[in-house]
Image 1 (cartoon, one colour):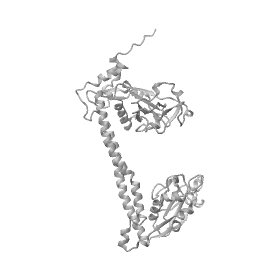
Image 2 (image 1 turned 120 degrees about the vertical axis):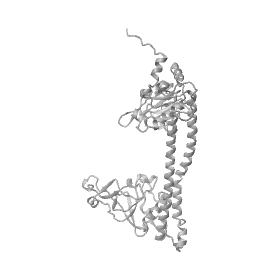
Image 3 (image 1 turned 135 degrees about the vertical axis):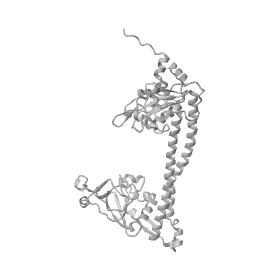
Length: 464
């Protein structure tokens, strides 16, 4: 008969749980210990169910189920799915608990290992097979959560995961061997309190900065409103003896020539070989001035299509595209080009090109409200309605001054916005730095006189 395995003693289990000195990532205070995560934490994998079992509405037979989409910086509960209760088989370990740490264990490489903390459970809820619940044993869940958050931010879980075609996976066996710095329980509490105190101050600063960043669009709209109501150049008119009545009403269709586009056959390679003429589509309308395009056509391709070859600087507007649901793209092009059938090119006769560009941007919502076609499957602009768009047009010298002032004011705004965005990014870096210092015992919270965390580890192992 084979020998019956004898249970390991506490001391033997202790040696298995402790991380040898040569494997410890960095030094920690003397009363801390490095342990295997599996010694102090339980791992519960979520339930599996067929895709057809997903439901969007709650009823008496189903239950909310968390998935990877719910694992955000805070647990996101606004986009839940529901599955029949039979799939979790009354296994209470599959129910979400207060203080659970929910980890995305099957996701893209960038998101694998992301965690959310469960502060409160207001109704029964389970979790799916691509997420896992981590449950701390006799240590502070929040302390473990912040450590896992740091490891995720540092990208460590990517290196620990296995990769399939599009999905990275991290297993409970890998997590069980993960190294974890364990301080005494009272020190865990002090560290969590210190982290949250510092984070609260940073979040307050972040909120104020975000308000400044979000108001950029409002300030830009205000600048354009002043520009096209004459307020921006009021002083300029006084200094140059220009009457306030000099602005004339004009229709957009009167500013110059309107040219449509066409599409050279994409199956004819000779139309695209060594292409040097910009072929602009709605996908290229991503900047104020278009310098390059995804595709370029050659002279043969232009000649054998309905597209117009345009050499003069022009204004481009999108006339047909799904993007018109939310915005009206406008751009300028100042080098030879052609456009596809979803765009129109407007070549001004006299008016300043940049002035017309900013004028159209300032009227974006008005155009979407009044010039859209009804009853079409793809959002489209009615070209006659757009040509009938009226605007107040100043003299050409005042147009130039308006463009100069807009460029100057928006350049200052962009500079301020960039500074704000850099400050926001630095806040995230500071949070990462705080977490890194916290788990090295560098937040000035550790008390060397406290008993070693080795005693806490013994208690955990004794209970398990």
